[in-house]
Length: 110
Length: 118
Image 1 (cartoon, rainbow over the protein chains, first blue to last red):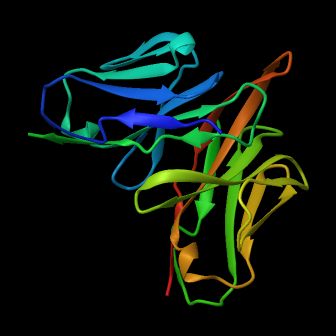
Image 2: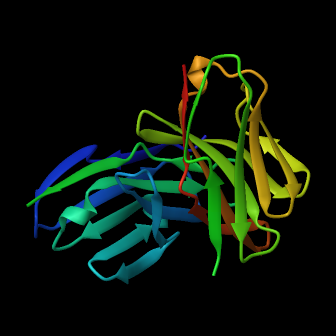
């Protein structure tokens, strides 16, 4: 099956700093999402981005499908950005192989 | 707009007791529905998915079962809970677009149920 890796596993930032989170996947996919899981466990959709680049406020994401990776950029980080960031991928023809990466745990300190 | 509800929010059950977790979606028709489990704060595992009423597919054999009695209702059940069933259970929905054989779908998650089996 598809293997999904995320790096770094843990990250501590000073408020206002920028960061880049990476997601590598081992096979062709056409469904890729980035989620933020807040301290209460809620998974919040950030981006649906099987390819290309998208931006939403301080967050942006880029997926290079041919090279099998995706990047999530967080600029001017805030304490509310703390939590775990997951990427999730699925193969082109399958519902049942939605694979989540292990996540990046981000702590933003004031 | 679409919303997804799960209940209960938290649950403490003894080993060997039954389980029923419910998930409902509002504001959409014929969604795909999914049950995930998350253990130890990381690593979501897909348990079941459903593409329509009465249609359930299991990703991982386990002590759990799922049912979809109505279009926007998805239920996770167990006849006898095990300690290893403890975790955070998340329901999700998606609408699916197709292009040839390729499937495109964006998932949206409910607030989750935190289950502790004692």
